Amino acid sequence: MFAVNSISGKLIAAAQPGALLIDVLAAAGVMPAESPCGRKGICMKCLVEVRSGTGWSEVLACQTTILSDIEVRLPTLAAAEDSCLAESSGAQVELAPAIRKVFIESLPLSMALCWEELCLVTGIPVGQGKPTDIAVLRDVTMFCQDKTPFTAVLDSEGILGVEQGDTCNELYGMAFDIGTTTVVGYLLSLADGRVAATVSALNPQVRYGADVVTRITTAEQEPTGLAALRGLIGECINDLIGQAAREANVPCSAIYDLVFVGNPCMQHLFLGISPAGLGRAPYQPVLREPVSCKAVEAGLKVNFVANIYWLPGVAGFVGADTVGMLVAYRLDQGTTLALDIGTNGEMVLAHEGKMWACSTAAGPAFEGTSMTCGLRAQTGAIDRVWLQDNKVCFTVIGEAKPCGICGSGTISAIAAMLKAGLIDTSGKIVGAKDNGPAVGWLVEKDGAMAFLIAPGQLTHDGRDIVVTQKDIRELQLAKAAIAAGFKMLLKDAGLSSQEIQRVVLAGAFGLHLCHESIRTIGLIPDCLCGRIDAVGNAAGRGAQHALLSAEARQYAVKEARRIHYIELAGRSDFSNIFVDELFFP
Image (cartoon, rainbow, N blue to C red):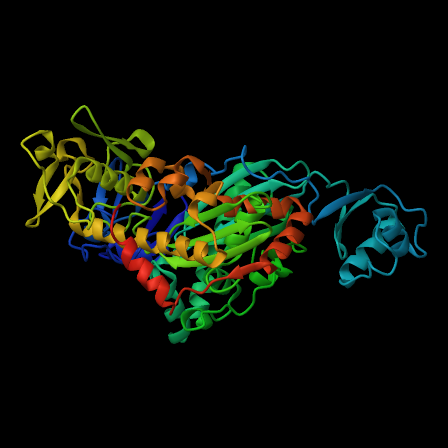
């Protein structure tokens, strides 16, 4: 057996001699098992760096067999490079976490009625703080008898535990956003509210499929499918907890509270609940209420008294991540559209105290992975394209040599093609109208025209980076789903797009977008272009708010209950609008 290690020296997996690297990385949950090119080594989407012996080299995981111990360096997700938080535009919360600590130097009574004395000192009404763990009562008795100073750990229900000495500064929590593709975690001090570490990883469930539908099918039809999916995400969360604790130089035992957001499928799989109801009409989750339980029940390696809290959901595929967005960016005033674009597009429309919400299946186009030269928003991905001085210009995440194009880059490239007249309103590439510079922007790929963004001499691997006719069709489907969902919200609310005063655009995807480009392709109406506020990972920020403030949790429950959910499946008016929105303006 050979060892496949990360650059930090951590063992990713043990591999049999001659095993394909892509199979080993997929089994470890750090890379999809299949590549778009069918493992022919031509799509370049499994490119990684390996060190075997003394030097680093770039290889394709689908073409590399393991013949010795190696180290692997994977592409860096953009979500890991910054916390995707827009601190200036979100709601602010007063620091009042659900978990707190009180240092007890001594109790008035050394033994008799010491539990009642402890309740009085910590501010818990006598009778409400009844002990739920006999070990805690034993420890309190011992500390009182020995006159040993100690710290009480409390929540709103009572006393969770006691610890010898003054441990009030050792009080941390973690907020997690479990996405279909990426998992992001934030380690926060519950004593002062600061973010001590931000960590992220590819959701290891991708080995069972990039979309929620495939994972629902796996959980429902394979005998061990649900347990396997739950195990993968649990292990991922524990790895991120450990990574964050190491970065902040705090023990995992100092983590007492964890708040989670994610779409309903991700919630079901994390909790080990069958998501079968999400896979068939009427597409409903098992529950919409918030979930609270002990972290040890979920197998998480934190303090043994730590709690888990999942924000509530709404219905269908509008879940805790959408509610988290509302907690972070409260829609209490004016007429506002909150939109989170990813594999699914969740959106909420707020007007005069009422809210409507829906979810549309945008597919992987906005994530970039389904495109011919597509990548996630990671180092080396082209994230913006424009035309200037008769040249095709672009920017690259991480200022590296380009190795592909992410979703925002594809949108801006297609917008540039529309402006240059290279494609018509139906999305068909029609070619240059004269012999000007636009002629050189089109090349032939596999017998069809494609838009050349970066020629091979400029790219990481020597291959042209292009946008093809297939890519344009993929984007049309995705933008039509989002635009049609938005129009359905307007229709049911009896509003026009001109009445919307603000658009909250959530997700890391939105941070890289050029607002003019999404107007050009028709993702949003012209009148909203100047009203967009790109806020980054709003769901993750909402989870942080709920970690720091018990009031934010109450607000989440209140808001989730008053949202009117619109189920789009089966509505003929949605289908008609969707077809119309396939065209570009």
